[in-house]
Amino acid sequence: MSATGAAATQVVIAGGTPLRGRIRVPGDKSISHRALLFAALADGTSRVAHLSSGDDVARTAALVDALGARVRPLPGDELAVTVASPGVDGLREPCAVVDCGNSGTTMRLGLGMLAGRPFHAVLSGDDSLVRRPMARVADPLRAMGARVDGRDGGNFAPLAVRGGSLRGIHYELPVASAQVKSALVLAGLQAAGTTELVEPAPTRDHTERMLGAFGAPVDHDRDARTVRVARGVPRAFELDVPGDPSSAAFFVVAACLAPGSDVVVEDVCLNPIRIAFVDVLVRMGADVETRVTGERAGEPVGEIRARTSELRGVVVAGDEVPSLIDEIPVLAVAAAFADGVTEFHDAHELRVKESDRIATVQQELAQLGVAVEPRPDGMLVRGGRPRAATLKSHGDHRVAMAGAVAAVAIDGESTVRGWNAVAISYPAFADDLVALGGSVA
Image (cartoon, rainbow, N blue to C red; front, side):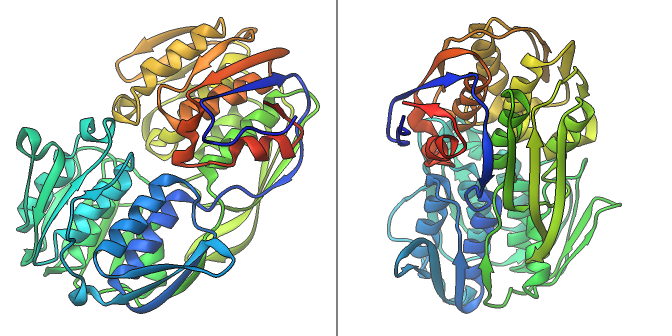
């Protein structure tokens, strides 16, 4: 059967068949966001290829364009763009409210960049985004000298920011969040003095790696979980964005679960802090291996190979959780097929993602006949024999794709409703699943 596009409201997946072959997933979403924002800070024209194809990154491109850094697609390739920036001091006030859609990255990192600009801007988003907490960014930006306001004292969008005249601060992040850290780095590049940030646990370090590769004054001491930033900007650059490991995780888990499978995800970002899900799968007994083949913008790049495996329950907790928070929905699916109990702890952030992912994952696994015990900071999943079912996305792209992964491994047909949510990050997911041998209608 041919795949149904991301605009479809539902897909039907016939499981139990092997997945085999090589695939390249969309460009890394985190790197794509940052490449566009860093290009806007640079003076001159940057070229970015293999951008993430999802709506989230399109929102960041629209923000950058609204600030006067012209984003234009290259002929014949809508996922390759040039960003012609007048330099950070040439950016202009947007003439309308910036709609961030469902993208928390656009809103949080956008706030950090706008905090250093001497003009007024307003950021808003969809029904989900305006319920996600923003005080964690607004409060330290205020301490740096920006004026930020919004609903509930600036905790919820719409958010208005009037920036400029920032000063560096020492700030210990109360929550391990790469988005908050990156927002403050963007503000620190525009502040007088030094900004020093201390994380409670390691988080994604794309901002530090990329800015360092592009010549910006950012120093990163991972052992001390400290980032130091001075005033300065990156230079214009060219970047071919490597594949998104969070997107790759769905095919890696699917290959582990579907009988007779052997899948290679190629040209994918292998940043150690982004492939913590591989470490979890290996602990579960998965036949998964990575191979670094090069480096791009400070990021190791290579391939992930996954084959059908017998899995066992493990504990996922502590400092590893911030590095795989986005992969927990699909790891919970892996746990549903594993022997024994898998425990997820210290994952409070799941409550404030595109959906309450503890509640939504529990509900969907229950539809599959899997016992799940929710906890305030995670869940316990009792592995068993999931059955075909009708599942819902809850408007959450990762829940939708996790449901598809479960369906691939179950004999019979399962339906995933609300499939259009995958457009947020991976519109061609169903097509790529079919390319590997999956049956999608």
